[in-house]
Image (cartoon, rainbow, N blue to C red):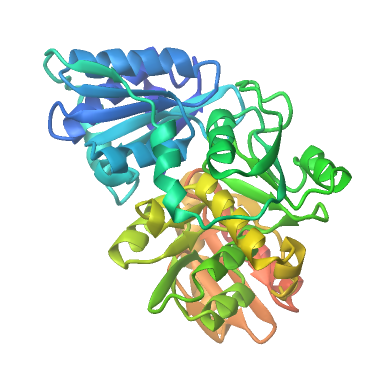
Length: 448
């Protein structure tokens, strides 16, 4: 087994450079391992994103799963949220999505799911999956079945009753040459949205902009919203599990603020819960509480939030990076549904998105910065940072790294789950002081 395979396994998925770390042999072993993970041949889904290398990997996985007795639902080119939905909605045993999410074009990889559309990740089955993978054992060959399964129409029919009639808004949708190109058009047609699409031809080289939508990369969308007098803009990442919203003035909306706007939809419900991650602003937490939510703070990451969504019966969950989770969608991550609900809320409230955003007064804050730290030093550095900050802070939260509170704000220091880095974010009037203090601690500890 190739030596480089191990470093492609990350906290939530498997990613590497195609042809160097990810290849057809790897894909075969992934298929075999999923069969072992679900307890023998089962009913599984396979989907893929738009990357040039995805077709080869997809075909290898489909053929191998079929050859080892599985009933394979071939979803073809689909957004990742539709892949999750298919597993949950059709009651399948699991599945494999061929994607490297928002990574550059030369990468590819796999998102693995078990029943319910729940991601196989660290602490949520990845340890068992890796054990099967690295054991080298292959399931016996037996006759399976291949079923071409179109989930697009099923998805649209499923969401229609969950959306109140909307008034006409003008919406610009930036596909970014990614996997949502077909689904978003079907949604607009099925729900009667007035949409114009840009960068809507699927292309795994992502020629229009990088696969990851950020304030810096969606200039074309911002310009289109302003020039065409649109009410809303949205940009999706390459596999469609992240959404970035742009208001009618052409300004991007931070993920936690967009989440607070979406949470308004459920204002009238009682006993409601919202799962938020540790990077969320205190202003957003306060807004959620004013709407009657019990807030449940989670570690950053899909698996942690999905687990809390389902086990705590939450209505809505989110990450600052643009992932949104809904009880309406089996508790799963669905950026397309977030966009649908944003259109619904703006339309029926009769209020501009910029006005809704302006009601949430964010304190000064930093972006998330990263400090390179060798993989084998991350735990030691975090232990030292935790010790030092705990000694001087008024209060600390250790759900994910350490979030230390002071008179003039808070600072969050946490290790990256996928890179040899430690991440730092701060908020409050003293955010710059706190950011520099934490950065200095990380640099000092990592160099000793």
